[in-house]
Length: 257
Image (cartoon, rainbow, N blue to C red):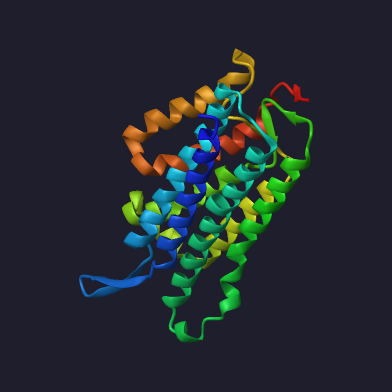
C-alpha cells in the first residue's frame, strides 16, 4: 500500500501521455452544411485527448489525500507529482493550443504558407507552468488556504475544456475558439495568471470555517446547478468565477512550516 500514492501519480502521467498521443493525431477537417463549407476543430482525437487530461486531473486530485491517509508522504512523491503535472497539464494542453492555432491557419486561403512560428506561442503555457511548479517546490512556507499564482492543473483543465466546447458547441461558442486571436489571448492570460503573485484559493482549505469555505461552496453550487442548465458550458463560467473569487477573497494565511 505504501506505493499506492506514487502509482496514482504515475497514472496521472500515463493519462497525460495518452492525451498527447491523441492530440498529435487530431486533424482539422472541412464539413459542409447547405452548400457552405466551414472548418471543424473539435475532431474525435482532440475530444479523447481532452478527456484523458480530465482523467489525469482525477488521479492528481486523489494522490495527495491517499498519501496523507497512508502517512507515506515523501520528497520523491512531491517531485514526481510536479513532473507528472508538467506533462499532463503543461505539455498536453500546449499541444491542444498548438493544434487549435494550426487549424485556424489551415482555414485561411494562404494555409500552405502558414508560418510555423505563428503556432509556437502555444508552448508559452508549458513554460509558465514549469516556472510555477518550480517556484512552488522551493517555497518552504506554503499557505494552507491559498496558492501563489494559478495552479497549473487549473490552467490545464481550462484548456482541456476547449475541444469539448468545440465538439458540443453549446450556444454556438465553438466558433469563437476557431479564431487565432482568441487563442492567443487565452495563452497570454493563463500564462500571466500562473506566474503572477495573485493568491488563488484552494478548493479544499485547511480550515473548514464559514469564513474560508464560502467561495468553495459557491463554486460547487454554481457548478452543480449550472450543469443541469448549461451542461459543458458551465465549466468556463465556473473557471472565471474562480478567478474573480480569488481576487476578492482573502483567506487566512496560516503557513505550512
